[in-house]
Amino acid sequence: MVAAGAGLLAFALIDLVGLVRGQDEAARRDAARHAEQVAARLRTLLDDPELLQVLPEWMRFARREGTVVVPRQIGWLDQPPAPPSEAALPVAAWALLHRARRAEWVTHDVAEAERLSAEALGGGGLGAPGRAQLVLDAAWRAARRGARREALARVASIAGDAELHPVFAASALRLLGSHSPVDTKNLWERALLLPHRERVRLLGDRPEGAAIDLQRHTLRIAARQRDELRHGRLLRDAAPDGDQLVLLHGDRSAQRGALVPLASLFAWLRAGPGAASPVAGQLVGWDPVWTEAVRPCDPSSGEDVARVTDALGVVPRVQPPTLWTHPVVLAALLAALVVCFGAGLLLSLRAWWRESAAVRARAEFLTSVTHELKTPLASIRLLADMLEEGRVQGTAKVRDYYRMLANESSRLTVLIENVLDLGRMERGERAYDVREHDLDQVVREALEVFDPVAVRAGLSLSVELAGRGVGAVDRGALVQALLNVLDNARKYAGGRIAVHSRIAGATWSLVVRDHGPGIPAADREAIFARFFRSAAAQGGAVPGVGLGLYLARAILRVHGGDLVCRAPVEGTGTEFAFTLPVRAPAPPTPGERTWESAC
Image 1 (spheres, rainbow, N blue to C red):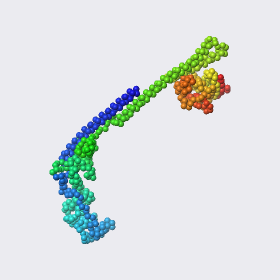
Image 2 (cartoon, one colour):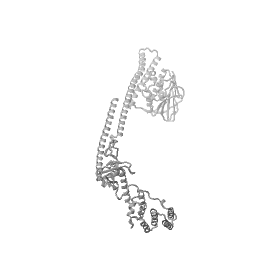
Image 3 (spheres, one colour):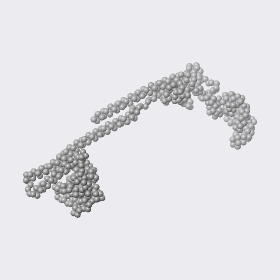
Image 4 (spheres, rainbow, N blue to C red):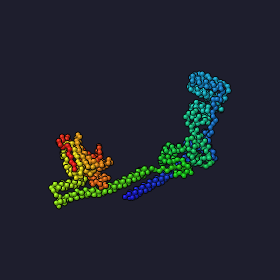
């Protein structure tokens, strides 16, 4: 059975492993096929020169003979020289300028500020940049106090200065605004030479400046990376906003291309079909979930990806397994299978052990019962033969033999009754004739039956009964329980047995004590189990079946009481304590408190 179960478990494990592997292989094949389809669609899109027409202008560039073409409106690619500082002013003019600013912003004396500014302009030693700075400072002050016409007139006075620096030109342009009557074309062209951060600070939100700066940024990267510009290549760390994908079409004499930041490409792919983005509009039916599968890849890494370009690929997206093929679920099912197999094995072993124990107990029971039955039967047959053959002489002697016959018959009856009661209890057929009886009187009845056995065994039997406790019991069953306990005590009596009862409240108790070797604490509860025999009894030193104490406790508990085994407070031996519920006890009859019997 164990081999069969292990074999089934092994087959189930192999089947589960095969199922998981099959599902994984199928999922990988499907993912690879879908990834190749996605890569083909992206490859077709990126290889189409018409895509350049829909990309933003600031991403695009053109090359002739390998050189990046710089449009006229861009003007320059390298950074212009830094603007002059206020330290270029003469010391006197610089001091007057700062006093004028302090008068305007700290003491709020605009008239004093105008006076100091005019004094600085009237001083000597000013070059064109210095004069332009002082003029623009006065123009801004006029604009702040509301004299716009004066401010525009001051700006117009320096608009044609060929030496005017771009920083000052941009400041003048911002001051003039879009409604100035002055021709600002020259100023605007000079403002285009500003670095991006300066232009944003001075020109505000003018869109022309931001677009030109972005396009200049793209052209600068294309010029710097001219040897790396190949279609489909990634320019890594070429720009602060991340990697850029190179799109390049045409021959060396005339090429058009674009530098597309990967962040922008992924954003367009996530937008889905029909979205307002240059790429998504070209991919009809595009599934945005594949956006996360598109990523940069190294051509020499040997990764399992579908190539879009040499540096861009689509990673196969393996679908998660279904619930019943998920590794966790399969592991749980396998664990449950192992647990079930283990539980079945344990239950089988337990059933085998119980069956073996039952067979051994049945054999021991039959042997014990046979032995117990043979002893009284042999005595009865011997006594009967002697009486029949007339070998017993004298009336007293005959009466003793008849009494011995009666005792052996009673012993045989108790043994048979115990065996029958066990069967009736297991079948639930044991019936009790419960009536109210004087419990001490029931004890006397049991003692009268047991007294000849005690005399024959040479035991000293002392009895002390407390009074008449009236309880609802089956008289015969209680006598049987008492005789079972007394007979057990006889086997280990040590020469004396003491019986005493007492009443405490609504509880009647009876203690049967022997003075033998005693029962170990570990066995004091086990002795009430069916067929339990102590080590000494199992060795054949003490006869018995192992049913008396079991039946005695069962009878007591059916009547609402109990039977326990305990060690005496003093001396050796064992005490068996009966308890039963009673009604209010009647007063004891004089002369009934003690009863002695001795061999």
